Amino acid sequence: MLHTQKILILDFGSQFTQLIARRIRESKVYSEIHPHSYLIEQIKKERPAGIILSGGPMSVNKSDSPKISEEILELGIPVLGICYGLQLICKLLGGKVEPASDREYGKAHLGIKKNDLLFNGVDDGSVIWMSHGDYVTKLPEGFSLTAKTENSPLCAISNPQKKIYGIQFHPEVAHTIFGKKILENFLFDICNCKADWTSKNFINTVIEDVKQKVGNKKVICALSGGVDSSVAAVLIHQAIGDQLVCIHVDHGMMRKDESTSIIKMFSDNYKMRVDHVDASQLFLTRLVGVIDPEKKRKIIGNTFIEVFETEAKKISDAEFLVQGTLYPDVIESVSVKGASVTIKTHHNVGGLPDIMNLHLIEPFRELFKDEVRAIGRELGLPDIFVKRHPFPGPGLAVRVLGEITVERLDLLREVDSIFINELLSVNIYDKIWQAFAVLLPIQTVGVMGDARTYENVIALRAVTSTDGMTADWFRFDHDFLETVSNKIIRSVRGVNRVVYDISSKPPATIEWE
Image (cartoon, rainbow, N blue to C red; front, side):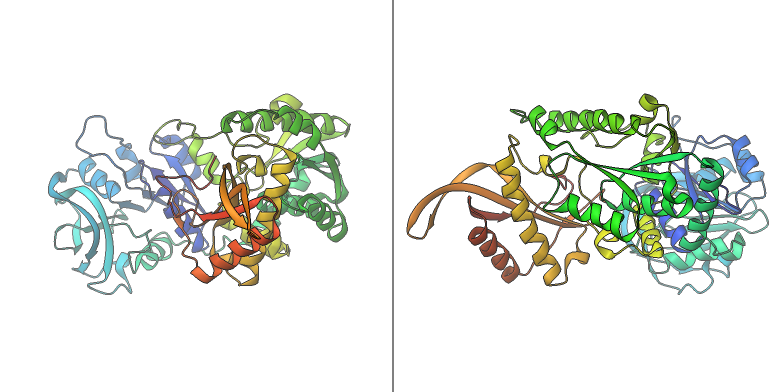
């Protein structure tokens, strides 16, 4: 997709790099993340409006630390170095960087030393967020000091003639009070960007691109009912209408009445063709006796591909496949740190293109999850789809711990429905990143109606997060937990105990499997 303006972010392994991109996009300017090794020839070709050098965990003084070509600093393109980025600028241009006596981590107060475009409208003494072990002790020639802190006497520097700026702190994190203002000063006053990266403009661009790419050919979309597939289906349907064929595969592990609501929503409200495939018996048969969570995921993923491929072959003139690939997936595939360790297999249709020889359409390849939600709202999708909590591809299979059976799935469906409906009834669903119930592979003793019981245990899970990478457990009012627990135990036969998960991520994951 073409962009008239972009900010290029070169990644040195910072945990905050994606946050930089998100903050820039929140200011309606398009940004892209690339590894620090991004070729200088490609940068020259793209001619970004500005370049940001991210933070990173290493010391610029180590021989194997990541570097950039000094030529990048001579292109005349505005550059902002953040933390490691500042130190690298200094190192490359003849300044000096040394280890600090103590690692500086947490809040500090910014002392602004001179007028500078980067700090227009920023209060002297405002709180900033530090996270570094080295610090600058000598400025490169041609640079001047613009700000300091108690422990970083050269906290911010600039060379306006070369349009190069550096700051030791992290403006992208919420703890830096004027962080957004500092980034916007760089975007608008230094890079001369325009705030034109909007949902409406994005939609119009995608529609025109898809029309030209597809022509009169058929397009297939795997419609799960999640945020990404739902928004993608509506967007592509706006572009090509009845040329789009959606396939909804019910693997038998959906939530209560979920497949029915998906079919009704898209068939009735949007007049879209949705082929409903009930493959639940096939999936459940293959899962008999399987307990290991990774085996569950692989069986479900492989079976999904098999079923989807069979159904897609029935659409003889289809040449394109819609996938809901998001920008974090793209970033992780070219991470500065290399290939990541697989914590769990993700259930998607990533293997389909090679198998089926279809051309890919990935409308959200440049977007974060919150941007996809914004696109959905712009397209008029109801909140029930746009604001929906993340739901794993294998569905309830990874929330039924132990063996998968129809009876255990049905039990969890009822519990899940009660939990989610209670969240909605007290208007706290939207305050939570993800909420769900887990059926544990244990039974406990209870007393119900003067009779001794030996029945199942349910664990409730609710977390807050911004991106799912880290998460904290949600602090429910105790009365709410009591109400939910009582409703579950009274209404769902086979449950006599409810517990609440108060572990954060890390060390736990959000899902139990």
